[in-house]
Amino acid sequence: MAGSGALGANYRKLFAATAISNLGDGVGVIAYPWLASAITRNPLLIALVAVVQRLPWLLFTLPAGVITDRNDRRRLMVIANVTRAVLTAVVAIGVLARQDVIASPDDIDQVLGTEWFLYVVILVATLLIGTAEVIYDNSAQTFLPAIVDNEHLEKANGRMYSAELVANQFAGPPLAALLLAVGFVLPVLFDAVSFALSAGLVFAIVATKRAPAPGVIEVERQSFKAELTEGFRWLWHHDLIRAFAIALGALNLLGTMATAVFVLWGQEVLGTSTLEFGLLSTAGAVGGVAGGWMASAITTRIGSGVSVALTLWAGAAASVAIGLLTNLILVGLLLAVIMFTGVLWNVITVSLRQTVIPDRLLGRVNSVYRFFGWGAMPIGALLGGGLVAVLDGPISREWALRMPWIVAGVAQLGLAAVLVRTFTSARIDAARAGGAVEDPVSVA
Image (cartoon, rainbow, N blue to C red; front, side, top):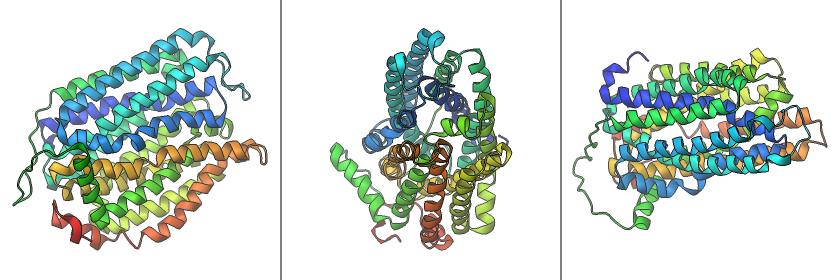
């Protein structure tokens, strides 16, 4: 966290808000799947929780971009986190009411039994929380340039991603394991409190609007459809940003496919306890933190294009290896590799978008980007759960749970062979040097 002070007081508040809310998210990363696995062992029903969690990125991302550009982004972030706090509290009430009768996860054949109502509550709340998350995340990414100068964006994003990962996957999972040992409701309550505190910190931020590019005249507000179309057109006409968006969609589809039944894979293939499962996420976070802090130095030393290639090849190989291994230490190291490469990719691409997209379009273009990049996640989760359900029988359940990792890794290897020719340092550096572009038709 050192070094964040030079970025200003407003950044420190956003940094703290991000760390606190992500600590709650990190607790939820373990608590919610573990809770779902105590209600059902069906891989499709487990995967459905992941599908519903990411479905708003497919259905709501595009209108969220227009909402972000039309409204005060700080206010939207506050409203979104207050909403998430309330919804999470509702889940906590449901869990508290049924805590004494939630089944043990040892019953592999259990589908839903008498706990179908709690399962539905979790699904509905997850969908609504995910919708609020779309608003918060899109607003947060487009809000950062209002409090950080362009030349410091890579540093700011790297520090921010490190804070997210320290809280989300380093501190959160072990904390979740300790809370789960006491009762299912405690981690859910912790999640609700974290969202509330984060909302208060964001409320305290005072930001300024990023100045428009030279020669740009502010335009009157258009219709909702016209503004959405303008954001879509900007992205589609910027060859490099469009390519990154489509590539991210393919990568996220494969990544979510691999992790759709992560909790069942951990329990049944690796034989993890709650604490060991939490420590797996913590091991991955170590790599993510390193990626966040080292991203700027890495891209400076070897170039953005080589850095992107590194993320593609290393992440693919690690996924295949994870599907073949059972050693907890080796799996933890490979998860660290995946997180390192994922954060390195994010720091490069997010900083690039914040630099080249005009402020008045940032929310809309960012939402279109995430529609392509994140909208594929529910599809990947459904494919991952479906693959396990189909193969569980023709092959052993253990290998059925391994196959999403292997299939996703092999597919990413093929994807990497194509993408490394597109994402070169020369193209990325040229786009970054051009700054915010109102008309990207000629940008390659």
